Image 1 (spheres, one colour):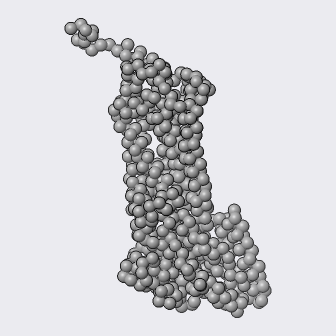
Image 2 (cartoon, one colour; image 1 turned 90 degrees about the vertical axis):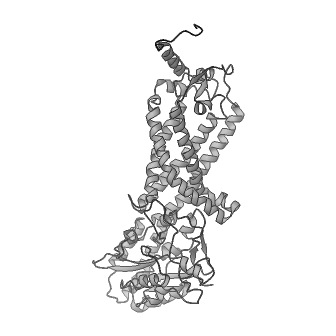
Length: 198
Length: 330
């Protein structure tokens, strides 16, 4: 099986936020919830760099490790998903997540956050694939249709890559070799305990 | 520490991998942002940037502290909590076997003296019932998935945990109110003094068979009082930080609040197990103090001799109400 990963080539990201918009639209993500976001480091200074970040679908995911009700599971493609019917909205996954991926419908409402929502790698959830119930809870299931996450598919500069870790790492390696520089795969060390060897 | 070493290796690796690339005639200078990000990660700091959405918490790109919090939650807290609670239970079993139930010496006298008035008792039970539910629902968040989840299944466990979470959030308020009342009601009898040192030196009569003098509360009870008040204050303060997430603090503050909250809470649970034991099955005549409020005079003389003398002296000094007649005069 593939080991699905995201790879962000920050030398290419132009902070257009198309990935964010694509994600919002594809899954009809409610206002206030951001499964994907673009963070700009050193904004307006030399070496400014933008990074599109969502759930990285970590190896040994911290969210799953701390969840008091064990609502997370990892698919055969190593995508980290969760069951909203089991989530109690305690907020622990947000404390543990290095990337700030978990989102809650209500954050400040007396601790009653509601069910956690996060990037599903466009792979839906535990409901039957591409049913209405799955769409309402988790959004579209593109993986079940044989497609890759829409954020990466939409990326105009192909800064954001999604797919099997080996394949996207190879694409990135070739890029870095051709252009002669590379800032490294953002978050890979944290998420997958490895980096792209060039 | 392990994480930092990994990050350092990553940085070295990126550095080494980058060198030949730059040597190949690229005019590109190393990116300042990348260097800063690597430096921040090496120091275990958050990589922070600018974001165009209203949720400013999302401007944190990577927060490595999450790993430390995970380590705390899954390893440190589980061990401290497990050892404290199970260790105290084991200790109580040993105490019970060694010492048995502590009897009233000479048996009950049949005459009673008021130890706690109705308000004190109602307040005690309000705090106690809140504490038990808070403790169970809190322990459930750390240990439930290992203990209860395999027994009752995921759906039922979620239901229990959800109700537990709601109860935990709302019972925090009567619990805190009760603690304030406890502080106001009992602080005057809980100031440590010389009697307590003598009580502690003789092992309080718990170890050995000494009968140290004691006022209304002995040193052990004073300890329980201060653990309840000060520990309760710490748990309440950090608990309110958690129940209003990100309202007063950021992610680091939330993690720290949780760490203080949970460690103090499991230690308080261990202490309260001892308090519950000695107040009920561990000692004859003790539980009446908090049920009817009337304790047997012999019990009181045995455990709180100075307090009994004081109370009796008050009674002797009291002037009879006008018109009162001596018993049997009519």
